[in-house]
Image 1 (cartoon, rainbow, N blue to C red):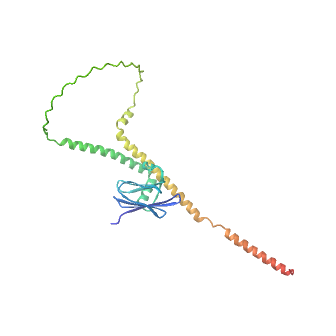
Image 2: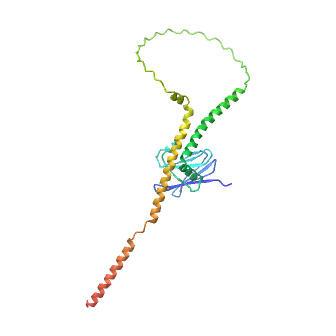
Image 3: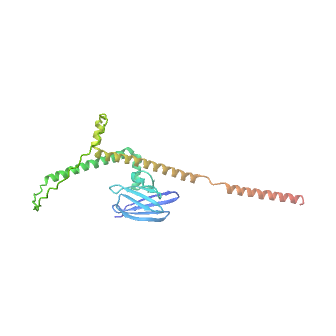
Length: 266
């Protein structure tokens, strides 16, 4: 069975970046700039970082099931803020690829995408709770045997006389009476369940950031296509035609002047 290949490409600051990813579990990343290979790397990391001192960095993201998500370029010295879902420039996935289909789904159905990601965060929390309950139930059903370990008899240590230390007269500081502040019940509930609520909130925030990235990339791609179409339909410069016409007119005028001079006997 042939290995699946995902390709991203984009021209950034006049340089053509091309990334080819092959494989499912252990993936091979080949990054080229202007047709010259920058680096080749193999890894199973779902958030692979490809770094080059001369060309910058690439952050390539796959889902937990191995589906390609996006490839983001960072210029040399630029912070890898894309690890948090912001910054960088996204490369364009090959049309018809799995990454392109995923990007289109995010753009067409942003609310559904955000809901799925949020539910995924909630499922992770519930799954962790259920797993802990199952482990606790299994441990409670296991009866461990009592093992008597022969311990040696240690001699009694003598009592050491401790000196009486003088008491320090600490000054008495009059503290003001603080007001009795009643915290709302919902704040107490959130504080007590923060470790369960935080992953869900984080999943929602990351989903919103990904939606904004995809929309921005789609707008930039549309502007680039419009600019290319305008360059192709722009009429050619009439400089050459005008110059030719001017030369022909000058030659015709010169010929008329010569004929007129011959008639006058010059």
